[in-house]
Length: 144
Image: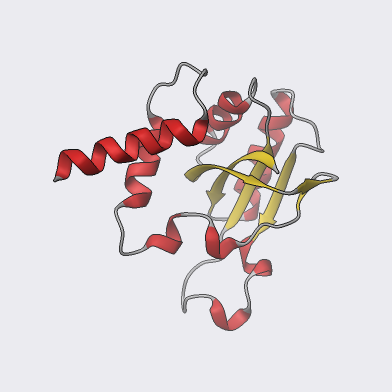
C-alpha cells in the first residue's frame, strides 16, 4: 500500500491545471493521477443532477506529503484526504469513488472535521492517520 494525498475538483480542466502545478513542484508523472469519478461510477449509481467530479491523487513519501497537500489546497481542491492505496505505473489501481471524499458522508459532520484537520498546522513528524484521528477525537469529545 502506498500513501496517497487526494483532492476533488469540479472539472477536468481545474484538475489538470493542478497536475501541472504539482509537476512544477517536482512531482513526476508517475506520482500524479487525474481520475474522473464519473468514469469509475456506474451510471445508475450517480446521484441525479450531481455534476461529475474529478479526483487528483498524488502518491507521496513522508518528506513530500505536506508539499502535495499545500499544492492541492492552493489549486482549489476540495475534500482533501490522506489515504492508502495500490499505486502502479502512475495509476491508483484500487481507487473507488464511493469510499473517498465528502460526498459519501452527506449526513455527517465528518467531512468538515476532516477538512479542518487537514487545514491545521502540522510539524510534519506525525503519522497522518494518527494526527487526523487525534483531531477528530478531540472535536467529538468537545461536542459531548
